[in-house]
Image (tube, rainbow, N blue to C red; front, side, top):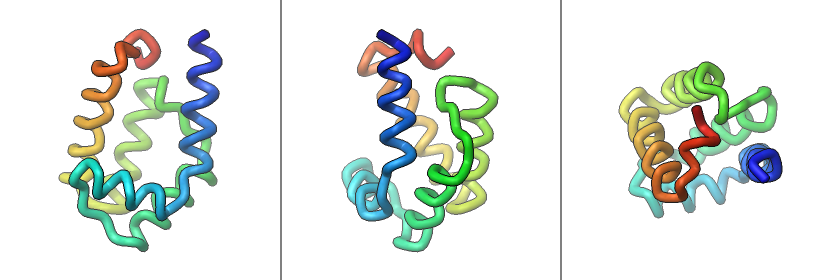
Length: 94
């Protein structure tokens, strides 16, 4: 089952649109511009990402900090950890 869940998450990240990202940013109290949303979604589509691997996840958040700023990347990382715990999915993100 975990392989299926991982595939779904990766697919969603690759298909995320700038407008969807802006919607989620507002929903979770993040401040990003339309241009930043465009750059983030382009990065997600163009680069091999694996949020389940700690090293690759760290690289993804480092790139997020480059596109936005360190505070936004830290907020995103904190939200990511909270969501993993709230869904009981810690075992997938070791």
